[in-house]
Length: 386
Image 1 (cartoon, helix red, strand yellow):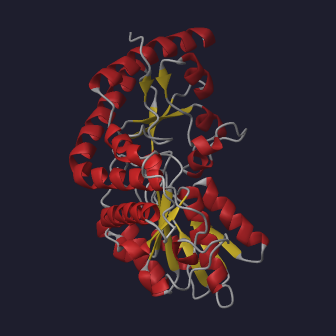
Image 2 (cartoon, helix red, strand yellow):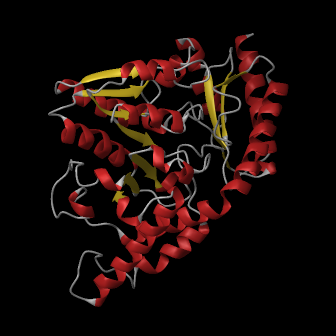
């Protein structure tokens, strides 16, 4: 059994790639200029670095650089997309649709709109976490301002049929927003850009630094989206505040690396994820797999252990193995995961479920070490309830 720390929580955050750290290094010291200072060399240099990063992010998703709005992360991007879209269309359209398994920042944004007179409908998902396209089609109308459905779920890894959703939205001129924070490691986003109007990304989900993300806004609606914060009119007036040059550079480099390595990386990640699942089944034959088995993030594994409390299991594995009960943004809340209950798990089953996140820097040794640690913890838990 290994004595070192093993990290299998890559859906909460990914470790910053050393190549990204190297790319950022100079921008903390000699490249410290404000990218919005247009009167001197320091500002010009920082501005060029930010624009280069913007181009790299755009290239990763098949967009144009001027369609990328830099934010503090996917949470801010999701808020700007949903609230900004609703605000811009509220005179003619006061209806919003989200899925039952969206991130909390999407559900809370929708709730805020509901408190302000909008109608919000929630489209259900099946046992694998895939939305019902028929139900979605019946909900969308000429009153729908925006539909927000994530590309890849952060808890169970399910990949949604983005192209089909986009076509349904287009038929009613409803803007389609997609939370794609988990998507770059799972699917090629550049092939679905034509089907999406607004798309949110997060740097720290693709081996970049925390504290920065982006919102893609399709060029023909860019002038119509309304801001949700106000100040110096940076980012085309949609997101006021100084863009942090080092973080932007890091995000850009992370996007470049993801674009260049995604296919091979997904293959390796999937193999390690499958090895982990096979090992868990040997240790705990009663364990069950949550979410789609095919249309799924290659590094995601959500498992229910019927007789073992998830929080107790995770606690027993500390500090050697990092896994989680679900979204880091809902850790500490007393309710079971809304994602797991939406796919049909009972409250008890949800409380017995654990999320594993395999990533770029996971090794076979990590998987073997994690299985060794899990076996000891599971056997101890079984003995405690025997």
